[in-house]
Length: 96
Image 1 (tube, rainbow, N blue to C red):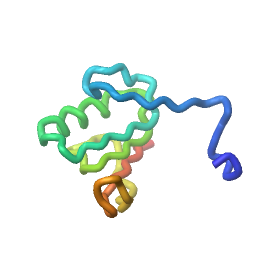
Image 2 (tube, one colour):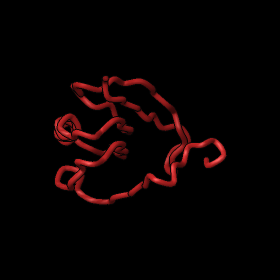
Image 3 (cartoon, rainbow, N blue to C red):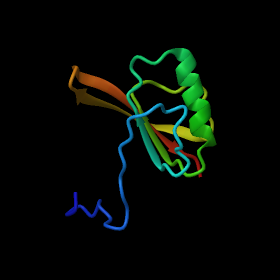
């Protein structure tokens, strides 16, 4: 990735395994959620939460997010996961 100039030594990445509804994500710019087993109610809560995060620019989710305002579904990838060779991943980008 360094050769592709994708790593900036002045930036950092942080992986957090916590309750996504309660944790402070105000500085998050990218969020990934492995939402395969999330209920419709939890997906709706996530959608609302993501819309309120001031720095959020991109979301990757394993399920579509309902009624997500302010973001556009830009890509639907199919990627291998440990449990299945072909899993849909939905990429949302914040509207400018």
